[in-house]
Length: 70
Image (tube, rainbow, N blue to C red):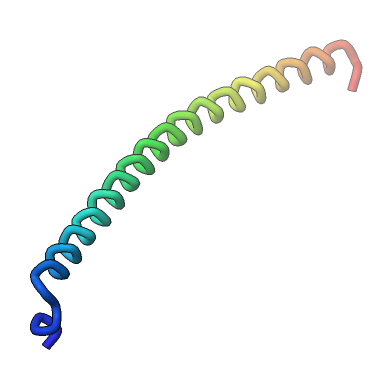
């Protein structure tokens, strides 16, 4: 029924539009995957810096305790 009411030009336009949407969404997906990868790497770096900061704070607490300052 629908195929009877659509002309070849309209069908070609619909198919072209669908292909265009697919290509655009695929490109967006690849871009987002790249961003996620970058954020995951950055997250690992932040965790390492926080761990180093906590270790430094523990050293300071020990030094202050040795001096008798709390």
